[in-house]
Length: 141
Length: 486
Image: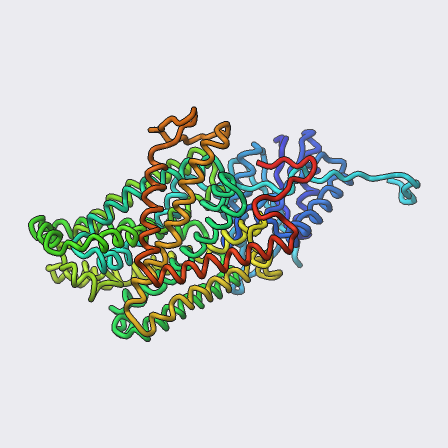
């Protein structure tokens, strides 16, 4: 199985960074490239193009770090900063527009009401993704 | 990798910035856009019918029809403007491009007034509908006004905190809204509609010419929310195609449903009943007049609940709309930066949300003392919205003259040619009609005149002081060397 374009949504978590490393390994085999995207969610009380400096700075920092990881892994990477109302549709839309072969998402162990939860983003992406999806679950002892 | 590597003097690492700081993910299509627009415009019938009946009496359906024609003109103008300039700001944005910053600010400030009054009116009409569940909400002016203020404070709080709202709410609200209204029209036409009775009620209760004109002005309130679609253009995929499509869909739906409801209402009750007992909850009045007990007993609580919910969403939409507009004006340096300030934790424009909610509450205060406050809120809304609409028409005409080369993916037809420039007849008629009615409101309505003038003058003073403080000319921002601006 070859993956020429892999989309890795990142949010600054360790699982996300590990997912980038894994994506690099997968991409290297097929001489493919990685697209790392950070989505800034903009509240509806602001225009979508509102520039929220603190968020942009945080996002730039995370994307810079992801670029360094890819550089260390000797992997071609393209980073993108997106502004959207919702993270999940933005990820799916990005995958459609960039015609990626795979979405690789790093997830952390989350609990909601005492139960393990995937949150809202993962189920939406799994349901609507136009390509294969791999979930990288961070080991939580 | 060498671990002892150090940069040599003179080594420079260039980390080119991402070509664009961020890209906007536009995910809305025609259904989502239509839902958001109809959620706003469609909700206004829950109060517009009563407010129009207060002055237009029997001529209410006629007046709504005439205002409907103005609505078509305005919607067409917005379709051309939004397709040409798909950015948040609506009429303020058109005016800024069509004229200059000062006119853009004036249009935006007038639009802000109409947004604020929309918040007040929508909040003011929720309690009467909920009166089915607890009578004081409808019967006591004090209780209903206090509840309205409570609603504004509640919405202000959740908007400052920034509770996540999905587009599902808009879509759901629009479906519920249309289903409720269509059911009411169908049931009303089957069990209530009597053309002879409607004809007599229209003819026997024909208003004076002054009231007829005032009625047309007030009827513009029925079309509140036309701005919403324009504001959402920047979130829409292919806005140049989809915004006009959604606008045209909305025009047709709104005109058909509003015509049906207004005719059914005059079959259900006399204009006097509509203008008194049911002024603030006219749709509940229709449900209460249905002669079949079973349908009436089901519809009454259903309408109370649905209208209350839809109006709550509309009030919230007004608050969201005004904060977005304030931010958009702020990003073009038309209002002080404080209005665009984003809360460090909640990431919401908290200052504008709190400030405009407080103004909406102040506008609600007279309602503690007099029932006439409702009509006054209506005329104040007309003052702001008609002024903004007039600026939209004027800006579209100005852009046709000054920037004929701009790409117009949706170009209005039926043009008159003057000195080689094509001017759309609908925009010319829209400009004449909206400005004439605005002048009539200014002359005949002292409350709107003085409150509206105070609002506008306050705005101009803020604008003047702000631009002076920033060392910016009043009419335009000078370009920096090499800067390309649309």
